Image 1 (cartoon, helix red, strand yellow):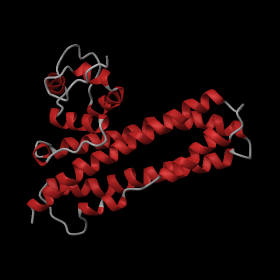
Image 2 (tube, rainbow, N blue to C red):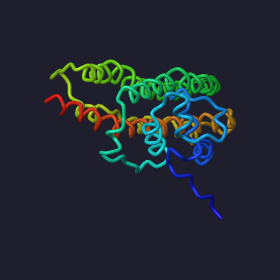
Image 3 (tube, rainbow, N blue to C red):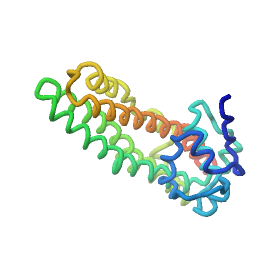
Length: 233
């Protein structure tokens, strides 16, 4: 008999949420939540770590179920400063942990490929990383987040509106598919097969994480900022 999934509730045991869906574990450092939470509830653990429990549960819901969309009432419970802190911590995680980890292992595969596949694999990975960085580092952190922070401080500007955000979400799936095809389909089978499986898994996990990150921005960030904009009309 399948185990019944723990409900996303402030009264739920924090540890049970983590063991029900292991993907949620990667969210903990972004909220500044450490391990060792014992049998405490979500509300208790969030309170101990000065984390907005409503935001935490909302993000967990999106990570666990990609079809989840928070309602208007739920979004009203969100503190925009907390959301920005989470998104910035996610960016830091991608740029300072995930990409360096992938690069370290991928470089060994590239070196073992020789001239036939090595430069091609390096090119597709570089293009993939640059597209991600172009969006999260140079667009979100230098355009979008400063705009939101200005709104929060009461400043109004007509130079940018959050409805432009969706049009700037980069679609990098084609580049990712090309890179995965080289790793899994076209390299000779004797070139570091175990490491290729491991790095392919890491890249696919990163891709899934980035997709969830985009859903958080589309379903939480954008509607919350739209409410801020409307309030200043």
